[in-house]
Image 1: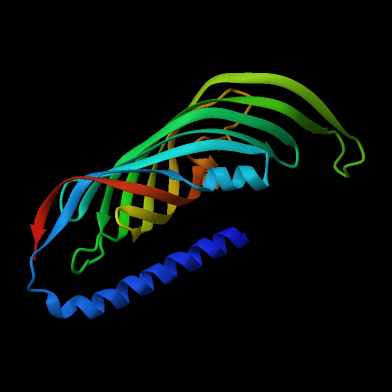
Image 2: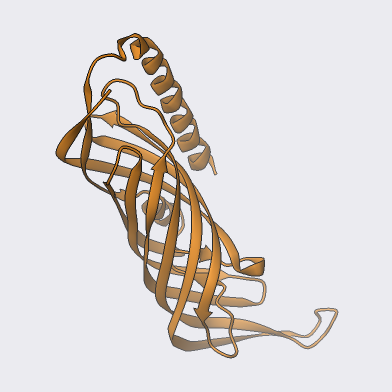
Length: 234
């Protein structure tokens, strides 16, 4: 939680710095500058940090976007997750990969030659995975006096999930072509394949599945822009 507050503080500080810098340069808005167009690639820092503090989760996510206009970007994420979920009455491990693709719209007005983003986006996500049921608890007594835990290694293969998500995020250029990003996403399962006797409570790329098949996600990214060409802006 302290890590989350630390990164959020950095993002707000960066946004304040960006706004101040643009205020200084606003008097030069008649000068011709150029937007960079190219491929931006990076990694999500959440999984490596979480793995360091809690060995119940392992994973890696690669992120990327490609600018197609001054405001619009094609974006995608590709990843792998192994996560152990420990609920009150069940313990299981999810193992699988996922891909998300969509678009981002940059609502931020950059001055001069800045390339920062405050954006809203949409993603379609798909994951393929397995669930291994490690143990479950049988309660035969309403007063919890007769509870027994059953250990099992049953593996449930061939599972999948499809979902949509809305993304709100920030990307700030720390150094030339190097970006630090933060985003929050709200998600909704569209369809999923799950076994008859077990509900998909976790899906790679979607994370924890809550009531009404909803969920959320948080990303911290570091990425690098590979400029391919430039277009003039006023």
